[in-house]
Image (cartoon, rainbow, N blue to C red; front, side, top):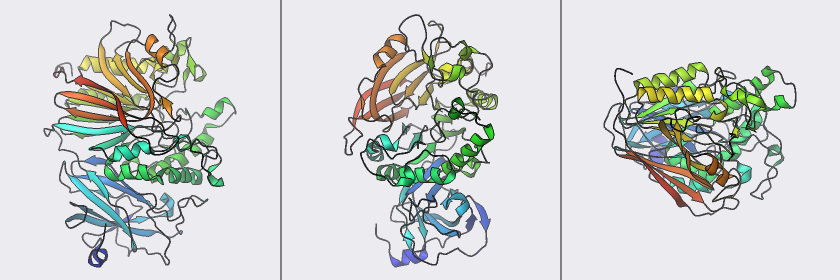
Length: 528
């Protein structure tokens, strides 16, 4: 896109105000400038997220040398002023908001300006400038007003994108979809070293080892976010993101590291690693200041409403959970998974979720969830062989959540889930030990973007899973993402899959589609 000299010189002159740390605290200081040309500072792209009826949070991180071994992106230590514009058109002839934010080394020179004063349910375009450099143009969209009649919502959800196990081709196709937003359910990065990878490409030595400290987490995000397909999908839609385990470490649980099984590690040591991971997560995602971590704590559970049609409740199933029962893994004889005091959500988050059930009037209630909520049994005999890392390892929490939803008559509850590198369709019962108990919700589990390599139509163990788990109606092990259309009559899920990911250029197709008709509102005001 061409930019005239007049527009370049006028960039950011309307309502400009420097904002400390790129989060929204006003400052009257003069703009910070760099003394030399650094290269393209927008090498990691742009993004927007967590939309509201009157605004959205924008994101970019200055990184002219994104793979610099110190993880600082090639930026000098000094702060830098970054200007932004929001417009009604992609040529920026009608600018509706502009300003500036300060990028500092403390936050990896990332910025997160929170935009307000926009119109509801409308598309906008945005861009950044630092010095003479102009970022790519991003496109975003605000949500409808609370309670406003909303006829449809189109979104995609994705998870699990291990760079070393395949290409991000799925995002090329996602960026071409007609969507209102994208929901990312976790495992945006993996902590693993990528010296050996299924792409068959050579990487620089700073990417060889496992990720433990802030510099390395920053490098890992830089590697992932340098991928053009991922940048395209971020630039095309607002995203709602959460985390699962690999943003920190495989199968971590609150203050417990998986490494504790092998070494006697003090919780404080793992909290230090978690703090570094959380800071890097914030620095590389379109998150609001309310998500800014405080050391090893970071609030990721939140709600986003789309008029009267849908309410999306994003969960955090890592930070507050009890350690996995019976040493983690899979088991057909772990009685501890039924313990009444075991929790996946932590009591405060669970109470917050249940309170939302009681107050929501949305036609569709959507839970953004990390590990499968439905029972996934891999034993076709009388035993129940399940993963102890998912909700199967925390049965009391699952029964409480689904039981309360049933008691309240929650309207059309749907759970969207990542983690498993497999597409599933599952019905969620109030009590999985009783096949006569009521169906409370539907769960759609999405496959990985590329984790696990090329995949297969029927994954290993898939037929056993379906035979042993009567509530699972569909299993597929190809890579891709899930596209959803929601309206006043039905929910439609399309499983979009690729034939391969270990080389680029794969085509996309819809492997299967499932429709859930809207049920009439079942809420009893007295019981609520």
